[in-house]
Amino acid sequence: MEEKKYKKIVLAYSGGLDTSVLIPWLKEHYGCEVIAVSGDVGQGMGELDGLEEKALKTGASKLYVEDLKKEFVNDYIIPTMKAGAVYENYLLGTSFARPLIAKRIVEIALKEGADAICHGCTGKGNDQVRFELAIKAFAPQMPVIAPWRFWELNSREKEIEYAEAHQIPLHITKETNYSKDKNLWHLSHEGLDLEDPANEAPIAKPGFLELGVSPEEAPDVPTYVSIHFEKGVPTSVDGVEMDAEAVIEKLNELGGKNGCGILDIVENRLVGMKSRGVYETPGGTILYKAHEKLEEITLDKETLHYKQQLALKFAELVYNGQWYTPLRKAMSAFVDSTQETVTGDVKLKLYKGNIIPAGVTSPYSLYSADMATFDEDDCYNQADSAGFINLFGLPVKVRALNDIALAKKTGNHFPSVE
Picture 1 (cartoon, helix red, strand yellow):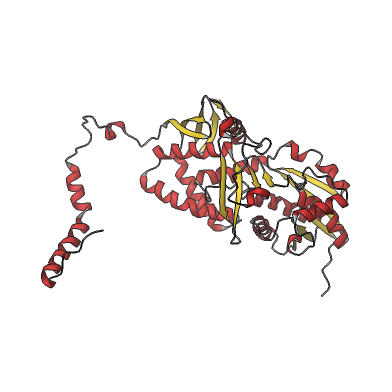
Picture 2 (cartoon, rainbow, N blue to C red):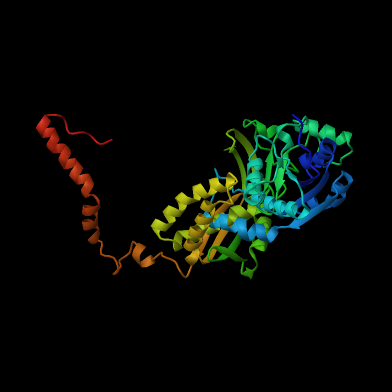
């Protein structure tokens, strides 16, 4: 069967190993024009510097570098944080960036009249699903090329050899070839010695961590930080008003220098296998902790508990690339309604990787010291609890009386409760 030919392919381009070799490979394989698209989601100028020159030198006809940072923060990070969504302790740094990048790639592909979109995700990973579900949501008829599923460069070592043979500059070697993803929210590390869970993650090794230091290297004195929220959205740090993007940047700085937000987990990928990764999310971990603390005093029990149940499903939707679905949209609407009173200030103590609550206040606080005190009060009649327990425990009492009656009738022993 003859392979389909394409005239113009838009490539999701990061300048990393996979996408660096893809430009010449696509041109060799399909004889097509390749347009590269990079999404700036806060990975830093170190990863974006020289990207255009590199893309053009390796054969791309042009490179789009799209500034997506504000949209990333306001429309993806903050809604997920407000939901309290956590996937197996992972704060979803790569997961919610991919749908946004893919959406912009689709927009450019349609504008350029491209007849295919290509990505460099492996057939084992989650990102292939996140990219392609977003493409289906905005360009359902657009063909998607995923070379990792069929090409001859089926290992990172072969990709490096191909890059060297084609004189493609790389910032990695076979010895430093961790698979990384970086954005404003986090940095992930996978591969090499991390593939064996028996190996300790080299977080104390110079150069491994990029967003901060290990807890052992953190200062011996704590850092205090205060964060103000308005309806669940962070609006200031230590009394200085700033937008959410600047809040994350500031908390990354504070959390990083105190060794906060380092996570080493074996997670369950969408495709079914387990994988081990080390994540750096200093600012995000602080923000989640602060938001959770504020909700403790501003949400009633039923709302809080139901929201905690929803958070797990929300996290699964984000992790599985189902951002552009009616359910995720409906869940966000519910979350937004719960945030109407999530306004106030949270103070945290950062110390050697620990994030310790140090105070929380809100004009909408449901906490009443008069109600909760162990001292004498005139707003709670403790005698009322007897009637409450009698009613609350009535089903237990009725069941026990019935068991006793049955035991007398049958001669069996009264069943013990274990």
